[in-house]
Amino acid sequence: MSDQPLADHGLLSDCHTAALVDKSGSVEWWCTPRFDSPSVFGRILDDDAGHFAITPRHIVETSRRYQDGSLVLTTTFHTPTGIVELTDALAMADGVRSHDLGKDSPHVLLRSATCLEGEVELDVEFAPRPEYGLTFPLMRAVEGGLLARGGAISVRLSSSVPLEVDGGIGRGYVSLSDGEQASWAVASASSWGHPPEAWSGSQVDERLADTVAAWQSWESSHQRYEGPYADLVRTSGRVLQGLTYRPTGAIVAAPTTSLPETVGGTRNWDYRYAWIRDASDTLAALWVAACPDEAAEFLAYLTTAASSFSRRQQLQIMFGIRGERHLAERELGWLSGWRGSSPVRVGNAAWEQPQLDVYGELLNAIHRLKDQIPDPDPEERQFLIGLADAATRVWNETDHGIWEVRGEPRHYVHSKLMCWVALDRAIDLSTWLDAADRVDEWAAVRSEIRDTILTRGWSTDAQAFTQVLDAPALDASSLLISIVGFLPPDDPRVTATIAAVMDRLTDARGLVLRYRADDGLDGVEGSFLLCSFWLAQALALAGRAGDARRVFDRAVGHGNDLGLFSEEVDTETGELIGNFPQAFSHVGLVNAAWAIGKAEAEAAS
Image 1 (cartoon, rainbow, N blue to C red):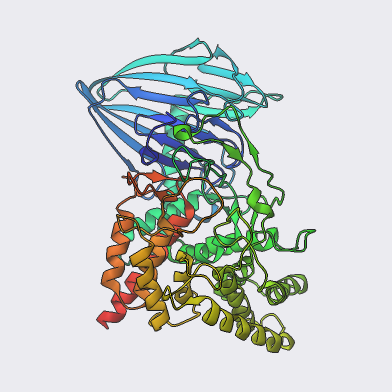
Image 2 (image 1 turned 120 degrees about the vertical axis):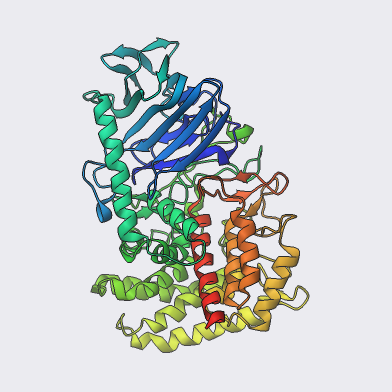
C-alpha cells in the first residue's frame, strides 16, 4: 500500500531494473525493462498504480532473508495452520556467471510458494497498471494464466493457480499442503508485437535456481572484504551491483522516484539516474565491496557519458543510464504519492544545474583507478585536461552545491573543495595526461583555492568549516575536508569541525543532518544517512575508532531486516524516508566500515 513503511520492502534486481516486494508478499514497484521505464506495479506511490500480491491468510509471523550471496528474496510466513515460503527474484539469463551477471536478462519476475508444514491458504491478486498507473489494461484469461494489454506494453502472467478476471484484476486462491508448490512468472513485451511467452512451473523453478547460482558466482568472485561489519558490507556490495545497469555500467542513485524526504511534503525527486557527484565515493566502495572490474565499468560509463561538454559549456552533473543528457522533469498528477507526498515526479530538473564539484569528482575517480584503466587516447586526454582547466576558470563562481539546492546559487565551500581536488589530482596525473605544461597554472590556482577555503571557509564564530564562504552555517559536507586529503585528519580545524557537526548538526538520535540553513523549499528533511557514515569515516581517519563505531552503529541500526537503507531517517519517528534503497547510503556504509577497520588495525600494530 502507498502508506506502508519503506523498511517493509525488499529489493529484487536483474541488473537492468529492480522491483520492491513488501512483507505481506506484494510486489509494490516494478519498472520494466529498465530502471527508468514507466512502472507496471507502482502501488508504493498510489493505491491504484498496480501490484501483484501473493498473500497467506491469517499471518501470525513473518521473517525474510536473501538466499546466501544473492538478491533472491525468501519470505517465510507462519499461519495458524502451517508455514509457507515465498521466493521472489528477477530472472537472470540462463547460465550467466560472475562478471556476466545481468547479461541478456529476460526481464521476467519470478515467484514461487512452497508449503513447509501443515496447510496454508494463499490469495493471489494481479493488477498491472502500466505507465505509472495511468493505463488500466484490458485483461483476459489465456492458457496457463492471464494476458493484459494496454498502452505501450502487454503483460503476461503465467500461473500454476487458476485465476479469474474481476474488474481489471486477476484473482485466485490456492491451498497448499506440506511439500506442495505453486509458481508464477510475469513477462512484458510491446503491445504491437507478439505477446510475451508463457512460463511453465518447471521453468520458473529452474530459472530461480539458476538465478541464485548466478548471484552466488558473482559473490564468490567479487566479494573480498573481510574487515568489520563484513555482512553489511557484502550486502551493500550486492545492492550496488543490483543498482547497476548492466549494458552501460551506470549505477542509479536509487531504483525509485518521489519517495519523499519529508513525509507529506514536496521534496520528492526521481533518483533513477547516475550522478557524477557520487562517482568518487562509489568507486571507492566498489573497490572495497566488489572488485576493480565493476569500478572500471562505472568509470567507463561516466567518462563516455561526460566525454564532451554540453552546448552550455559546462560539465553536466548527471546522466540517464544510457548516457542521456536531457532529463526533463514532469509531474504525474494522477498519483497521490507515498503517504500523500506529492507531487510525484519523473525526470530531474537538477540536470540543468551548474555544480562545480563535478570536476573534482570525476578527476578523483580517474586518479583512484588510473592503474586499472587503459592509458587515455588523445581525445580522452584532452577531455580530462579540459576538466582541470575548467576548474581553474569556474572555481570562484557560484553554484547550487552538492545538495542541489533549488534556491539562489551561492559560494559553497564543498564546491571550492572539489575544484581543489580536481587540480590536485590533475597535477598528480600530469605525466599520465602528458600535461606537464599545465602544472604551474594548476598549482597556482590550487594554492589560491586552498587559501580561500582556509580563510573564508573557516568560521571563527562557528569553530568549523562551513556551508558557504563568509557565513557560519554548518554543512555535513565539510567532513570531506580530511577524507579527500585537503587537511590531515588530526588537524585542529578538522577535529573542531567534527566536534561542531556532532554537537550542532545531529538530531535527537545522534544522526547527522545535511544542514540546517534555508534551502528554498517548504518543510524540513530527515537526517541523512550518508552524512552519518561520513562522520564515522572522518572519526576513524582521525584515529578515533571507538567513536567511529558508535556513530556507525547508530546509523546501521536504522537499516531494515535485509540490511537495506534509504536516503534519510525521519527525525521524529526514526522511520526510513527518501528513495529506497539509496546507493549513496550503502556507499557511505562501505567506506566507513573500511576506514574503521584500517584505524583499528593501525591502533593494534
